[in-house]
Length: 149
Image (cartoon, rainbow, N blue to C red; front, side):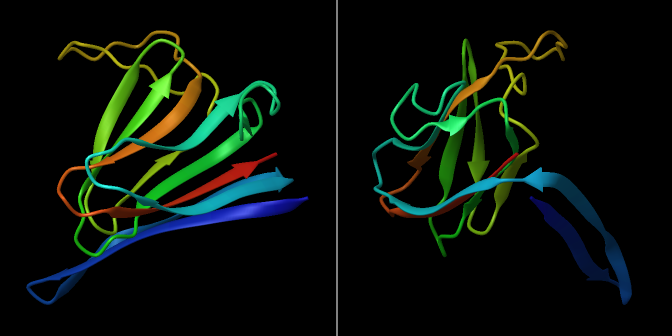
């Protein structure tokens, strides 16, 4: 078993003053990882990961309950993409500009989408899949890393 250590740092110098911070997140007892770099063709939706309670439950599924870290990064130099996080009943979408990442701390009971401008806090849903769609005519290169206990 191993520790997965993720560090997020921001640094910016404004008027000669250094600003920002560094935060570290550690997940213990990692037994498996899923790591993949995918070229996602423009004008198409590409499923980059699926999750299931049983790894045999769907083709290439990652263990839902034991997933404790998910990072999706747009490693393209110019392509902008949308990342859809689909759950058992809803989905939400975020934009990833070149170099940007989206991080989740687990796959079970972790997200829920709403068609409302009001914050709503109810029972969250399990992630079923992650899908990428480039916004322009450029293909997008995406990196995904998942830590599983």
